[in-house]
Image 1 (cartoon, rainbow, N blue to C red):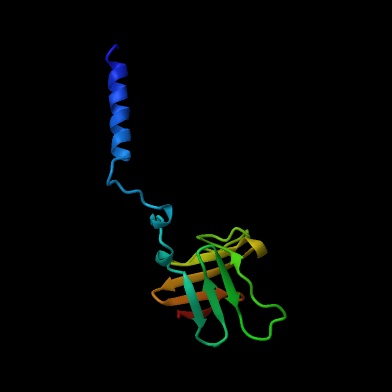
Image 2 (cartoon, helix red, strand yellow; image 1 turned 60 degrees about the vertical axis):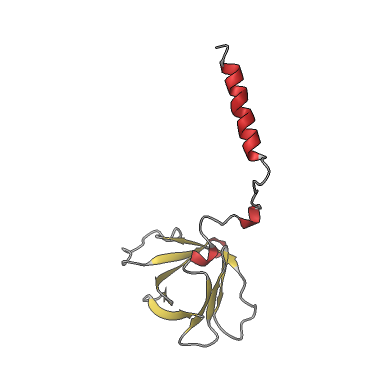
Length: 137
């Protein structure tokens, strides 16, 4: 027991000396990469609707905006979203086809079914789950 204290002090001194040793670098927090880079999010960016040139979806790390076209009373605004495997706002959900996920926007309690394949985003809108194709800009 009498050796425990000096050994503990030696360990602490060694750690402090190593951390503050000349030539050691500290990396600014801004230089530390995120666990999932924004560019790695497959939805990140702007998507143009193929069948209508003014339709687009813009996806940022924490929000998205559906710009459905011209002549709206109010411009589209960014809103919070998340991607899920189910729609929490619908009670009776039919079985989900393979690859379909949901863009959930809690502010207006809506879900938009979608599939993603490379640079093609397919959005499925009711009634009848009609598919609308978007391509990455």
